Image (cartoon, rainbow, N blue to C red; front, side, top):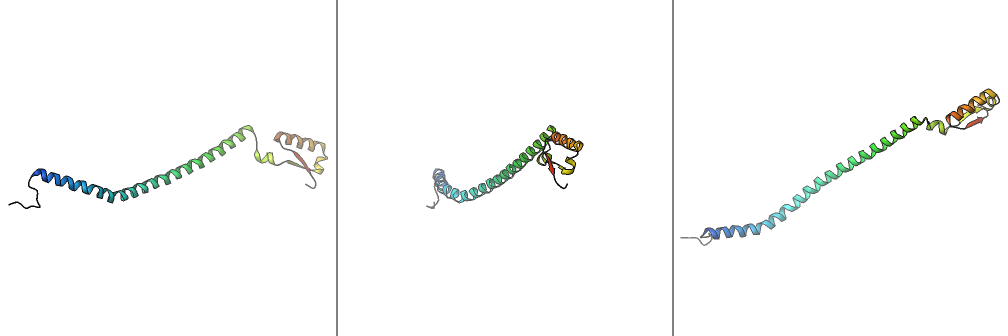
Amino acid sequence: MTDETQPETPDENQAQAAALIEALVPKIAEAILPKISESVEVQIGGVLRKNDELLDKLAKQKIADDEVRKERAARSSGFDADAAVKPLRLSRADALDVKKYRAAKAEAERLGVSLEIVSGE
């Protein structure tokens, strides 16, 4: 007394299981792939954000290092950027005094700046 819906032999049972698996695998993959893809995109997005953050941090550090390097080089060479830009000023009245003029001129040469004679100072 066998039911026609149930296989009679283990080989038939094995064949039906294989056919069922073969039919379900593409459907399961089709259902799972969008979720896996979404998860991977979220993870990659996080990696990209962290990468951008670290690259920005590295670029800022490089700029800071370059500024420190320039400052150290300026200090070691005795160059003062502020003094180099501003001329040494001497009033017209002091410029008429030979001692004051020579001292101011020597100081300007020592600093590497020009000597500017101004009226009223």
